[in-house]
Each structure stands twice: as structure tokens, then as C-alpha cells.
Length: 179
Image (tube, rainbow, N blue to C red):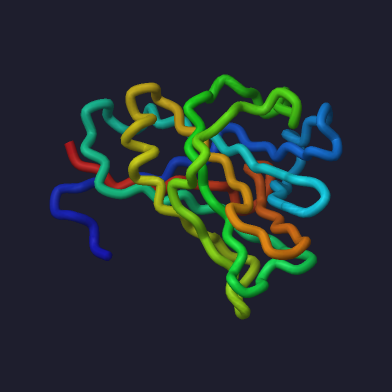
């Protein structure tokens, strides 16, 4: 889609990201270049935070897309119906990249804002996208947005690996707005 007339589009990169793992509840994974999302005998959730201060406080958010680079997958993740990874809004941006663990993770909305589905054919080594427009509108006054990625629906054992901000393809937020 073309940008709206008089709008500005900006890309904001994550300022903190980490995954948490239920099997190692006191371990921090904030300094590695991978972010895991899994749902089998263990669970991995990914937390990503963006600094929204480059967007004017009075901006009208037209659209916002969370983009995270899918590096690889493993196990069974494309059963029928398709497995889905949801993006969940987290109002608590006080967690730190080198401090978050499964045991101290921030809570997040129980319903996903948007979800991306695996199908029988899917591609890795590219960005996957979630529409988080409403979340950016909600978070703009606080100046920070945290999204949590987790399997919304899981039919088999498997996992997805995304690149963190320490990797070559950092998580990003593409925001179109007008003032």
C-alpha cells in the first residue's frame, strides 16, 4: 500500500530483546543473537522492546508493523490447522535485556494483537510481519512498546528461531503516522 498523503514512515529498531525458557526458568538469554519461540514440553516466549521517542507524541498512527527475521525452524510446526505465532501487547517495559528470565517475565495481554501462521509451504530467512497498529497507539504516550511473541495455537512439537538485535537482521517496527 502507498503511504497516505502527508504521512511519514519511520523504522525503529529494537532497543532490547530476549527470550525466556520454562525449562531454564532462572537463565537469561538476552545477550545471544537468537530469539526462540517454542511450545512443546518446554515453552519459549520472545520479548522485544522499541523506543518510540522518535515519533511525535501527538502523532496519528496510521499503521505499525512488527517485523522479526525468521532464521530457522525445527520439529513439527505446520500441522493442520496451521500453527500460529501471536504478537501480544505487554504494557510493562521495565524488564531488562540482561535481567529477564522465565521466573520474572512481564505479564502481557491474554489475547494476541495479530498472528502469523505457518502453512504447508513457508519461507525462512526473511522477515515475518504482525500488524501492531493498536499497540503502538496505546504505547505512544509511554514512549516504549513491548511485544511478546509466542505460539498462539500449537498442534505439534516444534520451534521457530528469530534473529535478535545482536544479529544481522534486527527486529524492527515500521510506523506510518501523520501529525
